[in-house]
Length: 192
Image 1: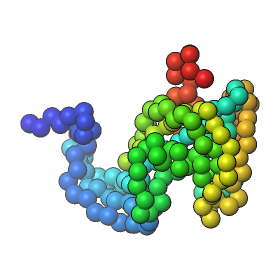
Image 2: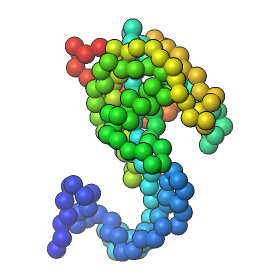
Image 3: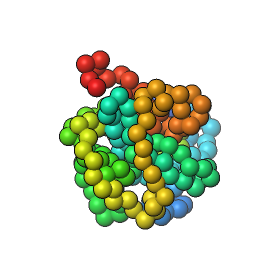
Image 4: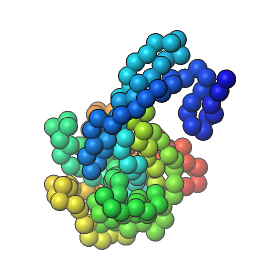
């Protein structure tokens, strides 16, 4: 009996894949349908979204955070969030290089220090995508170089208390950003 291992996510009591087929692909994502058998023997289909991993940057300075706001088409609203993104097609690099690139692209800020706070799953109920969270400190201002799709983006500094109030009232509702804030809160007290 194959009991699997914690590293690959499989186990004797987990869902077992029987077959897999790609049903959609674009430059940003793919969707596959897997024929599976559940632990009780029931067969079914599991749809999975595969996307490139990304980075979320928590730019912290002067007792507060730099946030970005842009129109998010799927929800039809402008939303505040931490800078975040993935490599464009044809580019690769380390997670810390990606964090530095996204911070500079979206805000123009350059970090003197980037500290890795954690690695999380984006939405593991339907996607394999993961993201790294970085704390950016010792910030220096510069010029933003946003992608054409980010032309409406703005960035602004908010006091920590303001951001926490925005979480409570729904004004800071991006799940990845809220999770990044939770990781920020878990850092050692001697950190900024």
